[in-house]
Image 1 (cartoon, rainbow, N blue to C red):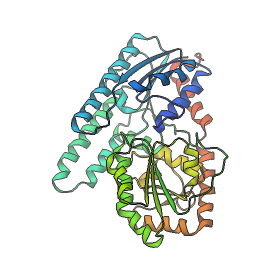
Image 2 (image 1 turned 180 degrees about the horizontal axis):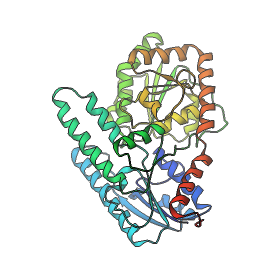
Image 3 (image 1 turned 90 degrees about the horizontal axis):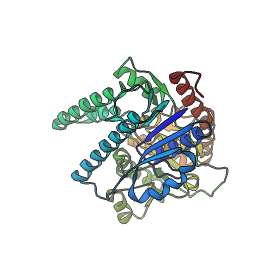
Image 4 (image 1 turned 30 degrees about the vertical axis):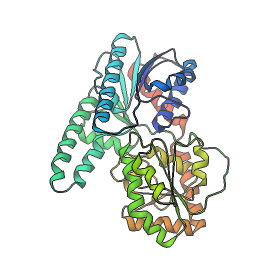
Length: 389
């Protein structure tokens, strides 16, 4: 098949963005059997990284942008404008190219992509209406009005985007059912992101009483809010029982409101981008996923489970994972119960090891890379006709 893969983030083997790593692995797998063309958005400084992708692609269509460390209103507007410009860039490529099939990564990428004759698949990664709805439900007083308007707008935009595609991939059955409630006529398949791509068989000594939260923060406000929630609402309760507990906030692009925590509190460590994710997971005594609204770090939860780490998560953090509570991980939504679960795992190493073993077995059974790629290729064949190969 002649495939156009459209990615909002640069696919990389060592990507700072979990989705970027998944798209790289997908590209690598498809390139073994198909002719793959890539359209990708990337920072100007990332242009040399395209050399890693050239052996995998028949052709690369880069769309560069200037990065900004600021997070003001104008910077956010510039980011939205860049998304729209890239979407228009991808739309022109689809119109002008003679592709058998197009796969678009992330809902935001498809804002200005029109429906045409070429079969198109949207890999949603996140359902963007879901956190908007939960933000509305959690809002109070006068804040309810703008939250409701945001929810209505996001829902209308996402629904309109979905209707342009022949098939939509979601990372979980939960997200699939959510989209079908929004628009029953959609063709939606649950195709999970494979887990444990960076996890090896190596072992590392555990850092006693260390609590890890690993995520991408630069463009993911939901992850920033999760880290702040854990620090302000949960971590004080943990320290009351485990005074030497340490909270490690790891991952790409932490804003000043996170980096400043380590300046004020010696028991908080903000690492920034992590070179050795395998080691980072395995040194942690407990991994936490305090996601408040959904649309958060499903990949990182899966990777932590793949690494054999005991995980404590909110219901939102587990809804796309589908692990069995109290067998594969612990689910707690109230700050006091969340803290109680973390403390128990820190003070009961045998329970922590038992939970870690079960979580790792769960991931190996349900989230292998081969199974994911087979689902993607089967969808391509269905849309293009089995005669294509």
